[in-house]
Image (tube, rainbow, N blue to C red):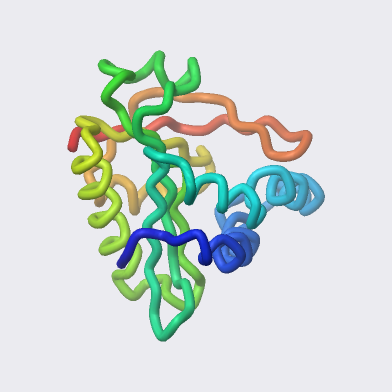
Length: 173
């Protein structure tokens, strides 16, 4: 585990393009997935995150390849739907992305990546962390429950032209 570097931007975009569709509902059109990837998961977007204070990118690297990553925003205002379900929006971090390459799933890597992410958010001053997870993604929900997250509410999340209903999960740090 390590902090992401600006030279990781392209590899992060490639990993994101591979892993984001795996978290989408089976009936989500591929065109909507591609639109989301093009709008939010490009090398340029990752370079922006990697160069912005309070945007914590943690990567899991093995033999020079990225096997997982998280993106956590600390000190950024939460969107209104997230703010509505947390007690203290000012000191709450937002776990925006948490993905592991299929080759590393089931290896325990995701748990280690989550532990490093929670430590980094805590070190950055957050006292709580919140995330959104698709309401149909039972595997991700189970993972987050094992990591100590609990349902705090719901929000909408737009992927392409499709509006999804996500669960909002949170935990103290």
